[in-house]
Amino acid sequence: MPRIIPVLDLDRLEQGASELRTFLFDLRTAARDVGFFYLSGHGITQTEIDAVLGAARGFFALPEADKLAIEMVKSPQFRGYTRAGGELTRGKADWREQLDLGVERTTISQAPGVPAWTRLQGPNQWPAALPDLKPALLAWQAKATDVAIRLLKAFALSLDQPEDAFDPIYRGEPNHRMKIVRYPGRDATGDDQGVGAHKDGGFLTLLLQDENKGLQVEYDGSWVNVDPIPRTLVVNIGELLELASNGYLRATVHRVVTPPAGVERISVPFFFSARLDATIPLLDLPEELAAEARGPASDPDNPLFRNVGTNVLKSRLRSHPDVARRHYADLLEKASTAG
Image 1 (cartoon, one colour):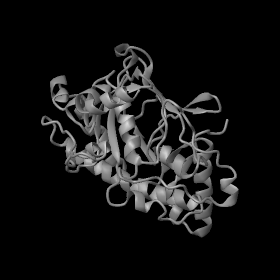
Image 2 (tube, one colour):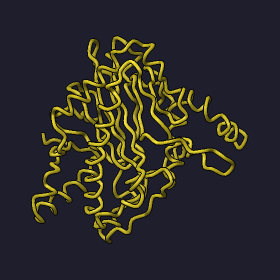
Image 3 (tube, one colour):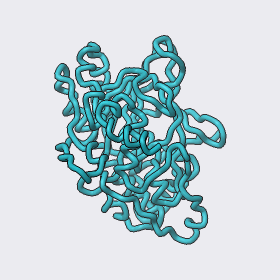
């Protein structure tokens, strides 16, 4: 049986004009057909991969009190630690513990008329008990950012756009974020939902998996395993590329199934997105691609907005109702009054 999730080698970008054309076709096809692919040739070494996985394991091995000292509910920016069952997907608890991080920036002063999504900019929370974690994860952010930008430029070319077509909406202050995640074995969880079925909201997600299985993608009405392949990253497109391409490229539904009893799974997803103040353009696709664009998927319960900040805040409020209640009560009250 042929592999459903293809493996693409990023080194092919540098192997001459003919190989570049073939790679761009393969990239566009993989993103449109499956929405997921494995990426090799990304330039991140095994030593760097081992370092970030080791840092993640070190954090999750801390006493619970040290992790709860940086609990996400303390952060208006939705940064920090969430224990298993503390995040919701489609209203149901995900059985994973995680640390959410974003770009280290200063907070934006709030005043009447300032958009609510500006509250998302700010600092991360770091565990005092593990000072080595911050440099390890920020180094991974930098490496993943470089790979994501190379890929995004390749996606622009694959859609017959200028290589820098997306530059104006991420350059300077991209809104990337990442997690380190631990999925406990089924003996320690409520059910098999590691994380429920969902799409990602940014441009691209670059996922590092350890050796344990669990990730699945929805394809042709079935769930397909995306099992780990050493020295690769798993890439999937997000809703911003779906919006920009008028649905020619599709963000794909995926989930994580809880590992078996006695096994834990570590993953490091990196979400590359546009600036919070950006508006996603509608690309002028060539005629043959435009004819195949079906428009972005529409979910009445989760509408997509071209304003990036509005999209991100909507997603965060839905996923972390405890943070929403503590730091965004004014928005919840306004929404309740309007409803």
